[in-house]
Length: 286
Image (cartoon, rainbow, N blue to C red; front, side, top):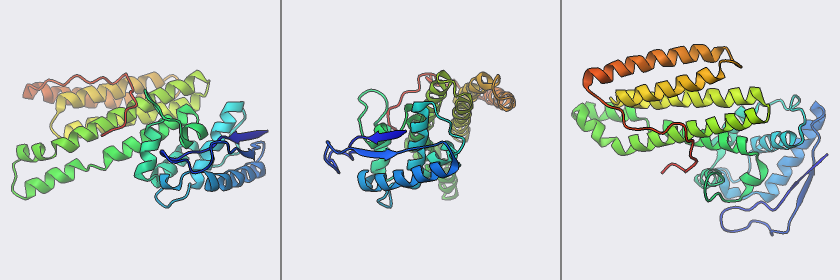
């Protein structure tokens, strides 16, 4: 069994000639075979992928793991001997991506998608989850609550503090909304392939990301929007309930929080802004 990687290009400048082919023998039939395959993939990626995609200028071993999952998926082979879960490998890759690498991942998706190392190495659902992880981390990075507290401690009113962080609030909202949509799309693709376990994993990530979005709205006094996001989480969790009983408890919790946020919004006379949670567009966050 073999896998062939075509030329892996970075940005606008090819690192290697377009005609280069990297052939790596891959066997996932046992633990030792998997270890040999991973070592071969790591060596191949070290010599071929654009180092500027990563903060330490080298492809992390987790990228080889994701490539191996893609290889197994394309051939209908078992992944039982790959010790590290693809979810953990995605976190590892995302952690090592440089700003250039993050953009490269995001631009492999949606309209005007660009063909690069990530699109050639990784299956679409794995790329969707990797992009979602990138966006989710971006959403968490804004630390809006800390910024509000700091402004208020400095003498600003809460209204002024909210105005000061509005730009970052919009970016945070966009990042979480996009991430949740990408996780949902990945869950759908996994489900279509009959990979129920992977579909549940991606779906749970989608639901949890909607709760992160709801938390952002709650923390910035947008209770109507928070209610909408919690209800979106509930819908995702309910869809997973057939395959994963835990999701039903998460759905009930999300519904309770949605109703609480809605009550608060009605008390304050707030109306939620329209939010298109079901489209899952893949445009990079600004």
